[in-house]
Structure formats: C-alpha cells, structure tokens
Length: 465
Image 1: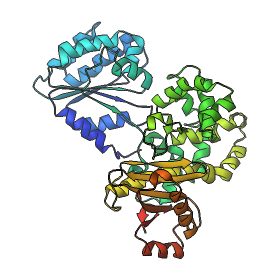
Image 2: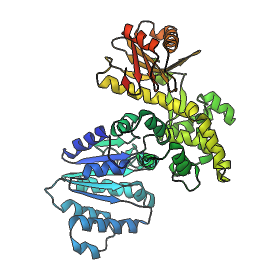
Image 3: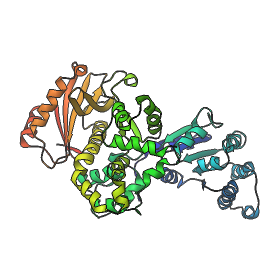
Image 4: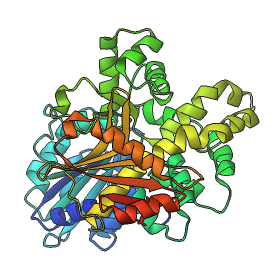
C-alpha cells in the first residue's frame, strides 16, 4: 500500500515504549504484512539506526552493520575498521550521543540466528551489559514466525524476559482499507479485498484502474506473476512436509471444516491432524472458530477450521486446485472457473467476515447502541446465522444475515432469521435485535418493516439505512 494507513494501536504501543527509559520491542508476522513499513513510519522523525539482516554469512552481516553504523554515527574511521565481535559494534552505538534517546532496529533478526545459533545468547549479553541501562529502544523484527517464537519469545530462549512489549502484526482490517479509499466503490473494495486480504503489498498490485479479473490473471494465475507461488514462499521456511500442510489447507478451502471431514478426505486418523492444525494456527494461516454462544469455547466440540487469510483461501480454491492447467498455461480455463463461482463460492463468504468487522465499527462509533463482548457467528443442527454479537452483561444479542446479491434484500430474509433465532435455546432469555447487511439495498417492504420496528437494523454497504 503506497500510503501508510491504519496501525493506530501498534503505533501507540511503540510510542509508549519509546517514552520509557529503555525498551525492548519484538515485532513479528508473516512476510509482506507491513512490519518494515510500520517501523519506518514510527522512526521517521526519531534518532534511529535501521539495520536489515540478510541471508549471508555472519561476517557479511557484520560488515554491513559496520557500514550502517558508520553512516549513523558519521564516524568515518569505522569504514576501514575490522570487527570480529558484535559487542564492540554495539558499544559504539551505545556511546554515540549518550544523552539522546535512540532507536536501534534490527530487521529480519532471524537471519542472524540462522547463521550463528549462539546469536540470541550474544544479543542477550549485549542487552544486559551494554544497552539495557542506556537511553535506548531496541526493536527486533522478523518474518519467520516459528523462529522468532523459538529464538526470541519462548521460555527456552536466552532473550526470554527481556522484551518490554511485543507486536504480532496481522493483515490490515477491511475497515482500515475502506477508510483510506473513500474514492472507491464499496463493492470494488470488497472484491479486491477478497483476493488480497489486508496484506499491503498484495493490495499495491491491485490498486489500479484495471478490471479485477485482469489483475488476477496477471499477478496470480500467470507463472511469472508476483503471487503465483506466494503460499509456497510463506510456508517453505516455516514447516517441513510442505505437501501435507498444503493438502490440509486445500481441503479446508474446499469446504471441509470439521476434523472428521478432513480426516476422511485425507485418509488420516483425526488425532494425526492435530499437530498440523496447531502449527497452521500458530502461523495464523488457519483459524478454529467456535459458535459465539458457547460458554466454554476451549472445551467445545463444535469447532470448525477455516483458512485465516483471504488471499491464501483464494489461491487454494483457484490456483492450487488447477495447478496442472496453469502449468500448461491453460489460463483461460481457470479464468472461466473463477468467473463462474468467484462471487458465490468466495466473495460472499469474505463478505460475512467484513460484515462482522463493520458491526464492530458501527458499535464503537456509537451508530448502533450496543456494547458487544463477543462477535462471531452461530451454527447448530439445521441452523446457521452469519453474524451474532453478544452483550453478556446486559443479556442482549444482535443477530444478522449478510447478502452479497445483485437484488435488494426482501422481508423474507428477516422473517427467516427471526425464526432461526427463536430456535436457539442458549439465547432464549436475551433481548434480540436483528441486523441485515446488503450490498444492493433493501426492498420497500423491508424498509417499511424496519421503520416500524426499532429492533431491526438495515446496513447497506457500510451505512445504516
């Protein structure tokens, strides 16, 4: 994303850490999610040194760190100096402008640990003995989630207990993208977001005046496209047995959300799937959802698994599923599959997630008089409700349906929703309000019904009717 948007809470955390005596912040998250952009936005008006580690021998990283330190301190004698000890370099940083508040960023920290497994221990000593009592804020940033957790965050790491804050950066919310693209039609943003998710770098490649389907063909379906192999790059350094993980994600994207369904199609015992699913959840690529009404969600047996990334879900549905055709450059065949089912099989489900976001935003802005403690969905025997928000303290519930259709939503949808709500035993004592989301407006009959009933809310695109 060419302009910086969102990330208000993350910037607030970084500012808080900057204003303490010394800070040790860990930022991690998947590739291209915007970690470096966030850091550069934070340090742009601060006295800061930014170093990007790379996949090379330690001596190469040390030489480049020396060059960066030379530029930062303006001490030209360092250009010709030779260092073999990291501590000497960090001492120079610490003693430069000793009274000034400084920020030191080490981006892609995991590469330093890759080439020297003792680097986490070395950096622990550097922090404890050289930097901790100075007016310094350290930011360690990394893209390999499993390694950052093992080498920086876990109890067994030498750096455990040193951090003063951590930020696991997730893709941007749809509402952030919507606010910063007020010049674009809501429908256009929904459909682009359904492919790119909230990953800023992906959005950049689709942020143009070309039709979405042409962007998909060029960036996702063509063998040389920027995103053609993206999930491979995301996972290949995080997991072993890439084929097994891909098989699981492909089948979840195809609609097999229960463990029993996955076990059946993969011909694996259910308990054998658990470690794979846990790893995918740790990487934020898969999410386990529980009906929002469950009192003890951690013990619920109603959990369903979903791909937790709209681009990756799209990729498994329309790229990985037709990889043979795409490798033979039969792109038109796959484009035909996308055109036929893109809205019904993909966008409509993403729209449900967007509606839950919109509900949270409308409540936080006071446009809906409701204080949700939980927002999710509900499913049970022969009942599914797209949006359910609970105010458990006041025993109130909002129940909603999301319709991404080209026709206005009619009153029948409301009556069907009301009938389903009455069958949910867990909500029998809750005061019920109904909310309907539509991208194509509402029939006159439904609008008249909503005017006569204060417990019916209609949301067209992102606005209450």
